[in-house]
Amino acid sequence: MKQVEELAGIDRGQPPPVGGLSYDLTPAQEELRARTRAFAVQKVAPGAAERYARGEYPVDLVREMGRTGLLGLPFPVEWGGGGGGLLELCLAVEEIGRVDQSLGITLESTVSLGAMPIHRFGTPEQRRRWLPSLISGEAVAGFGLTEPGGGTDTAGLATTAVLDGDAWVINGEKAWIGNAGSPITAFVTITAITGRRDDGRPEVTNLLVPAGTPGFVPGERNDLVGWRTIDNRHLCFVDCRVPADNMVGERGRGLANFLSILDAGRVALAALAVGLIQGCLDECRRYAAERSAFGRPIGAHQAVQFRIADMAVAAQLARDATWRAAWLADAGRPFHTEACVAKLAASEAATTTARAAVQVFGGLGYTNDSAVGRFYRDAKVLEIGEGTSEVQRMLIARDLGLPAA
Image 1 (tube, rainbow, N blue to C red):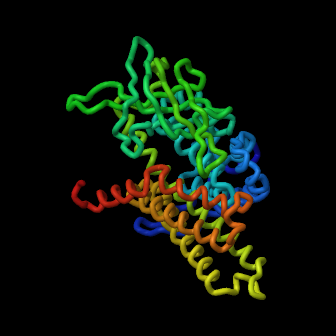
Image 2: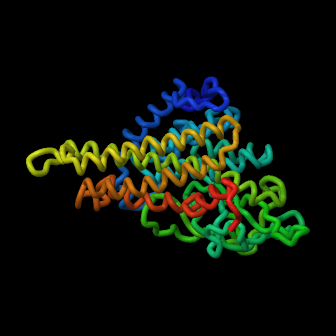
Image 3: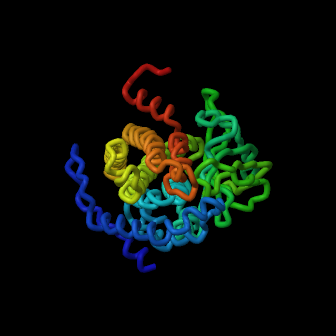
């Protein structure tokens, strides 16, 4: 509790003048970064390879992230949060992702996708009931948008909910949903078609479905190439009844609300990509000094030096883009384009960097015992989750005013 209290009431300092961006972190932000780094090195990194090999969802580490305040960083103090913003979350996600991408995405999704919809759109009663346990790490929640037949087409929803007296009756499926069936999952917030608008388009509404509700059936965990320890699965709803009061936000605002959640989620995912790039850089710098070939450390060979120098460039540029997007969000300024830019640039740089890191390590890099081998498997999904690279380019083009496709 002491650490949670120390993180509460974060002094964000005075924001830079309008039009300017300071890259100086406040003392509280520097302390958060250092504390998270220590937690990552001491508690997360030692068992990362074993957890990865077993595909073990790390309940104890999730709970410890709650106890140390990481799951509450962007939430108000009144709910047990840290009173910070998106930048604080990005700092923490980067440091966790620097040693364990699976736990990093669990942190990001628990905050951005699980708790944030309730914080932003929930009723006072929903916040009172659910937020404290999500912030403390005693529970996690899922974000049910994607469907098997939709994928990137978020508007192509098929799940329906019909109001029957004082209950919604839900039927449909969701796909690739995180934190939806773990031992500590409390609920899933979903999108469902609840009617038709005057123009014939579907009316989409958000509904909260508690774990264990009859008719809510989480599938088996998906067997992913990377992110081996996360809880990710398909969901099925068969005549699943939830109280009418479980509507989250206004009726008909479900898709707009969820898409607005994704903007901040893209920035946090960019921070996870920065963590992967930095983790590869850390590992390659160490290995280049230790490993010798042709009578000298491999780091003395220009080919290796160039690869590692490129990693440093990628880390700096991706971090700058991510921090800028997070700063704009925390300042209450538009950040949609910057979120797309950060997510696109950081995720593609992460994939390139992971491939280069495996090359530096050679055969050793192509094993799961090696951190860079795990990063290599984890990197690709960064170009898919929270909107594919193609979607980011489409959104950026739209923001540039280019003609609609």
